[in-house]
Length: 221
Image (cartoon, rainbow, N blue to C red; front, side, top):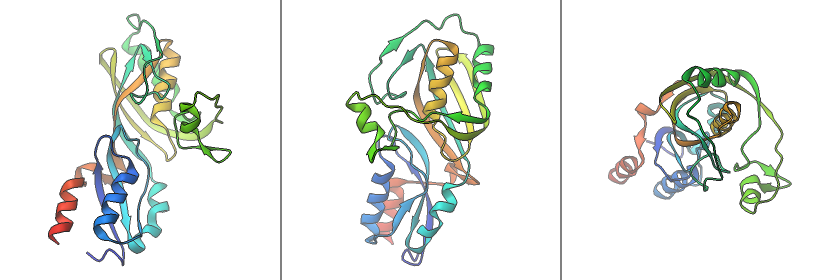
């Protein structure tokens, strides 16, 4: 591989790694400055990262524009400020009365072309500062809704309070916001316990390298 001239490779991001951690690890091994990824994953998410090196970094915007596919689990009856397990639970409500049909209807409300309010624990900048930093200081945050497209929002409610889901969506979609909004529609709240990105456009996580295997391969080469 000629990394300076440009290479694109798929990495299965490990749990609790930031997307930048992955880039930094690869950049350090390749010893070149131009390494980047096409689409951030939260530390508590796993799955597909498209990593570009050398002249291929010019294609990052092109890959970022592709649709994304995710699978994961939301849990009814509790909420956290971050809508995942990064923060502590801050509310609890009964969910026993909620039916599988009601969950499907709630998901349907957030399918198609929608306006979505990003989660306060996000990297969006407000007056030059990341929203999540302000959220950690308990400051009041108001984020404007943004247009996104949800092509598919499938739910499986056979094991409540856990609800398995599959989502196909446009770039810029926050899955945690969908989880939050479904919980609000149902009136019991919800948080996300796991998330995995399985595809970006036609790129599949099944074709991706495990990070440590990829690093080992680079060392052998």
